[in-house]
Length: 401
Image (tube, rainbow, N blue to C red; front, top):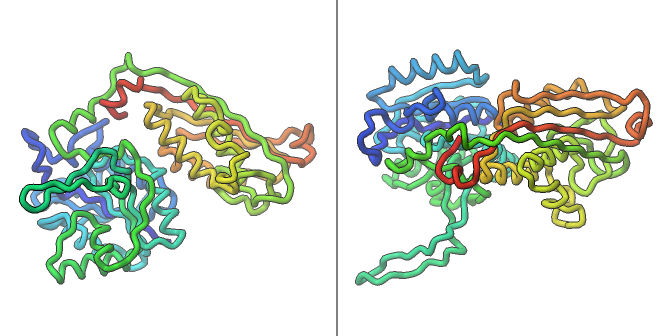
C-alpha cells in the first residue's frame, strides 16, 4: 500500500461569525488547527504523503506557512499543495488529480477536525489493508431523529440504523477517483466522499469513530479550543507487567511488530506481551484495574485478538477520561530472541499508536543473565511505565488538550 492523505484546508468557515481568520488556520497550541491534523497523519508509519487544499485568496501565504512548519517540525513525509475549488467536492477532485501515480489508497480529512488521533487513522488503514475499498468512521446516533414529510407531517426514523460519520474517510485511490470524476460529469453533489462511492454501488465499511473527533463549525465550537487551567490537571503514573510462555501457539509480536526470529507464544489473544504491559500501565493511570478486567482470557471473543485493537479501545477510554500521555518507558526481558534489530520499528509503531513523538517513547531490552524462566528460554516478559496527566471529567466535557 502507498497511502496519501488529502487535507482539506480551503473552506471559508462561513458559519463562524466575527472571525477574520478562517477556522482551519486559527492558532491552537502555537500551531494552526490544520497542522495538528497533519502531525497526527505523520505519526502513522504507513503514511507516505499529504496534499493540502488551500483557499485561492490565501494560497501564497499558506504555502509559505506550510513550508516553514515542515522545516521546523520535520514530519518526514512528502507533501504538496493545490488550490481549492468553489466547493468541497471540487477541492477533493483537484487534490485527487495531484496525487502521485504510485498512490494506491487515499484518506480524506477535514482540517477543522484537529482532535484526530493516530489510532483512528491506523484503524482505517488496517481495514483498507484487509480488502475494503471504502472505510468511514462513525458513531451511533443517540438522539431521536425525525424527518419532515408531505403536508408538514413528521416521520420518526429508526435510530438503530443511523450513524453520524466523521473524517478521515479512506478509499482505494482508483475507486474514489472514479466516483468523484463521475459525479462531476453528472453534475451530482454529495455531502461526503463516501456518498459518491455509494452512488457507484461500491460497498462502504463502517468502523467505530472517535468520540472527540469533533469538527469546529460554529462560534460555540471555538470554546473547545480553550486550554485547561493548570489547577485542573492531575499528574499520574501507571505501571504494567506481563509475561508469556514460549510454546506452540501464536507467532511472536512485540509492540505490534512481527518478530520473525522469535519462538511462538502461548496466548489466548495474539500474545503481544509489550502491548499488554502498556495497556496495564495506561489502566494504572486511569485507576481502572488491569487488562483482564476488560479483555478476559475466558472470553472466546478475544481468541487471537489483535492487541493493537485492544490498545485502541483503552486509548478511547483514556480520551474520554481526560488522560494526556506525556512519556512512555518500556523494557522487554528475554534471553531469546535478540530484540535490538527490532527496537527502532517497535518504538516507531508504538509512538504512532499513542499519537506521541518518538522522543516521548523509550524502548529497552535486556536479558536476565540466564537466570529464571526467561534466562532458561522458557518465556518472555515486559514492563511499561506511563507518565501523564488528567483533567477531571467535568472539565473534559468543555475542553480538549
